[in-house]
Length: 295
Image (cartoon, rainbow, N blue to C red; front, side, top):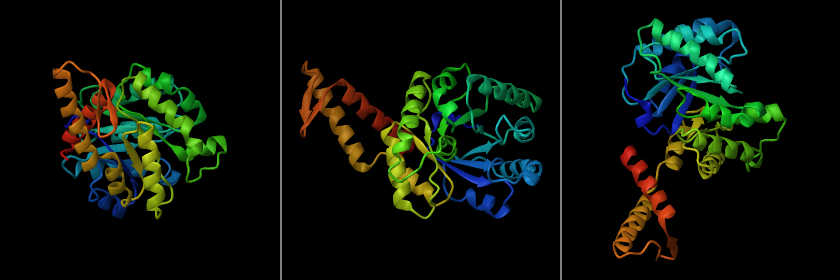
């Protein structure tokens, strides 16, 4: 199985696991990761049967670059452990765990996931575990979650439940999300994780709002976006993929600085910009991402 740590994952597209037509289409969109959902999108009466849908859908399709995830129900429900037991297998790349609020929550899910991997002959630790931080308690515990000794590679932010939990008004300017985004980006850095994945946008016919939200997330150091509609995937890729202009500028910065450094200088000006080591490192990061994405 492909190691997802080597692949920049920008778009995570949700679809209900028990809707065959939507499941069929979700693989055709070009998302970096597909998440078949057992949580919010599945009625209680359908949850057990939906687990079989996850296995059938993923095992029927060979891996072709898209990562396969399942979102299980939260730990405070009677479904989580059985969700993990029923859906883990070699067809899967990772498990998305909603409403994570502490390191101990993460550890409990780790134990269930390790047992499920061992039960089907998989190396323990092979699958990704991506916690969604979507409550006030989770945001305040983000550092603990990110630095817990676990397999997690990145965290995700859930703005819908977060604003519900705090009774916030979630407007297009997304000012009420700034604190949580900041906490998650700091925590991810302290835990040496991949950049976090930003919240969904509920207005599925408002491309302008989605792009604005994605840009806000990018400003806070997020690396991608949770998507709930196929049309949001290309918008996500546009925002979280370095543009031709960004790449050209980064190359110019690196080239100019290398020339200056060879002459004994470590700070220069380029097209009106002050350039020193931090700016060069940022440019190198942009070029490395562009190379991984082959743009």
